[in-house]
Length: 133
Image 1 (tube, rainbow, N blue to C red):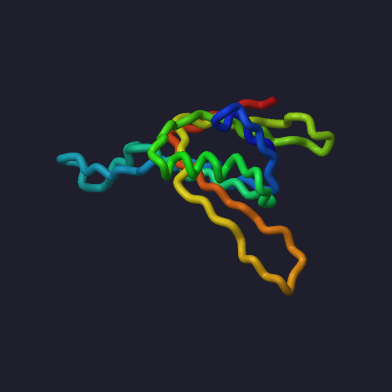
Image 2: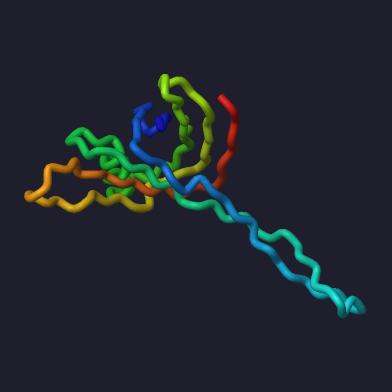
């Protein structure tokens, strides 16, 4: 997966991306005189946070973006998630709007293992659209 449009027009490649989901609340409504049913009406739509995982490097654009938020430089941004096929050509894409980095973490450091440290960034946002590449 590739993520474009990070602040500063940074582009990142990720081992995994999750959270591409949304849910519309169901609001049950009873109507006077209709005692045999409850009408199920659509309510607010909730967007899942996007979760990006990649190997950690000392030049992490994700960490830089998160640190700017902690210092008060709170600029929301849109972004594009591009799913790549086996030839690294775009297969599909999702665009999100008004995203901001709500959580960052790095995996466990264990000297007894020779594993790469995995960096995780979670982005809250206000909408997601899909388009075929």
